[in-house]
Image (cartoon, rainbow, N blue to C red; front, side):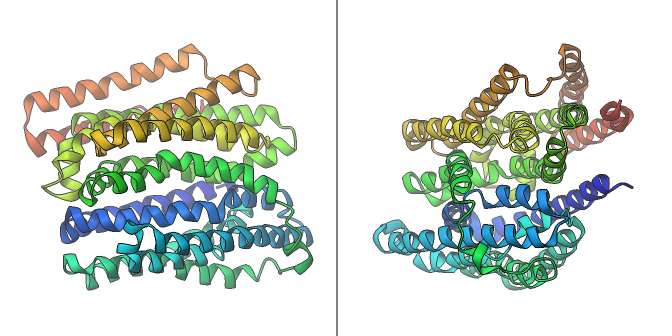
Length: 464
């Protein structure tokens, strides 16, 4: 097995196992905490994550790209590492100062200040997680093993200690603790590969790039992270709980493909640096074929059986999550395409300004839609915002890459095959609902869809 395939395997195992763990704990937590406390924790978590964006800005992307470029030179690697870490420290200190001020002056934050004080540990320790160092050096084996062990400890702790709705605070401590432990282990282990060089640490070499990519991350978060915080501000914790349940499967699927993209980005950066355009195009086409094959069954099955999936994830009492889920799931196809165009094409080409423009389009639309429809439609309005923004961002990426002839998109025959491959899934789901009822219909659709996918021989289709 070559290095690329091994890295994809490790990253795939990590991402898949993380969400298997999530599917194990999620139904338990939603049932124990209930929609209100579950929504409160998600409100606090998403708010902390939003401030974390300001602390990290574009560090993860810059770190991966720049470390990948010098990974074989220990001296240059340490200089780049120190400069990136110094940049991260600068932005983290500013973010923490603003975060603590807002806890004191925003009533909603002050009311639940104990949650936000706990969450501040995530902002502090994320500074030292330096995951970009190990991603840039393609050390996915270490990342996978470390994360699996810590996640396993987390799962055991959840089932041992979370027993009632009043344990929501302890649950938040456990989720924050995962980041703290990962950061400590990573920072200690990083000493084997890099050393801190003070001259480079205080140089601020990547501040401008960090701001550009940081604005991209922040504006993108307007329809991923900020919208949940805004929903909590204009509605209720219960509505946040409904939306968080509706979006769960979507983010699982997005993250599975992100695992593939995370492995491909350093490889594509190296290929672009060596001007290997044919190999780049080959990987791009394979990525699109992968999207065609995988997105269709996930979207179609979730649309037909959204009610069953919501009950499976969270139990009864989450019926208002069904409509938002049906609205959100088609965005999966869009976001996977945008990941290929952004992380496998534009970032390796250092087209940071294009990512910035796309984020301004998506973020601006998110602000507008959140203000106009979220107060009235609540969780459903937040779902509409997410879908609309993903459509706008992906459309811009496609327009730009076609206009500049950066890559060759799959021709019409590839798109036609994608449609034809998807039709049997629709037939399977329709017939299953016609012949069976409830869980029997859902189960039969899953089984026959899996059999159909198996006989498609997806590996041959992707590699042809």
